[in-house]
Image (cartoon, rainbow, N blue to C red; front, top):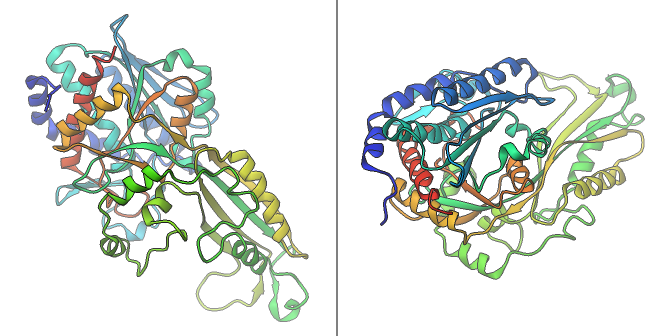
Length: 460
């Protein structure tokens, strides 16, 4: 196998792991929860922390304000004719709820059994820092990078990147690059690294159902006043059938079925259904009828209820008809499904299901489109070799069921080569209590990032 990393740089990476882990611990202590306004100061603090790190390495940058959280940009571009790599990541994290299920406080990082536990450890603070670590080791040993490097970090990925598209559109020259790379995902299996070549889109909606002006006595008014919680149940029950098919008229009109070669490729990947059930703590997996679990989770559109509320939920009993009820519903979309059109279809169908006696409001919270990127570019080949150098084996190719709104924006501003990589393990519990990131993956990911930087230096 061809090795890209000079030996002194590799030695520096290995010798610096303790220092890099301490830096990650400092970063993870910042509760940069983008979805909660009370933490907006901490989100900004995380952006400032990254800018300071970039400037310490010799980058020139700034925080760019948006209507929400700032975007951090920094560049180190010493060459006129060399390729340019744009590294993307996000410094915001999910809320830690339910906090009582964490073994240790979510923003007090703890190293246990070779893993670092904290919210954001794998998604995405630990992974994005592998690129910072790689750049630091390269500069320490060689004084300058082998190509131009730009870094852009956003603070709204966990809420759908609502302002990144407008930032990217307004700063095209700033983001101009030959290749974009990110590490914000997982390997296919702990021992099987992966390159993602497709993302599903995301449409996130909220349904609010209103009944009487206040909670009323169910003994006095039950049978006469429409119950918003019941109405919401009828609406939600009509969105999907027991076989996994979404019942919204027109939902599948633009969906292209999975190509035969993709189905064959997915079928050839190892998948232990019993182990997956055990890991998730469920008795059965329920893919869409006619499709496998991998096909259903990676390449088919879905609809899920993410949250539901209404009425009395405390201990004991309280016999009321609630004044209102609500739910949050997300849909994962595939290429050619337009989020705006699906939102209109969703709202029209929900309103058609609403019974009389209640008022229903449907709101769009966030949306982003789906994406497929080429698998045969020179940059992809460099990523394959870099991953092999970092993790000891060639990666497999797979679509990812998740969504990254910023990737759509980078594509829209003209970057065709987008490398969607991931150093995490599938069991890292991102978005869940006890999120963690393996320090070995932290080390190997840094090696892979350094190898990628050297590999991309020769693409022009």
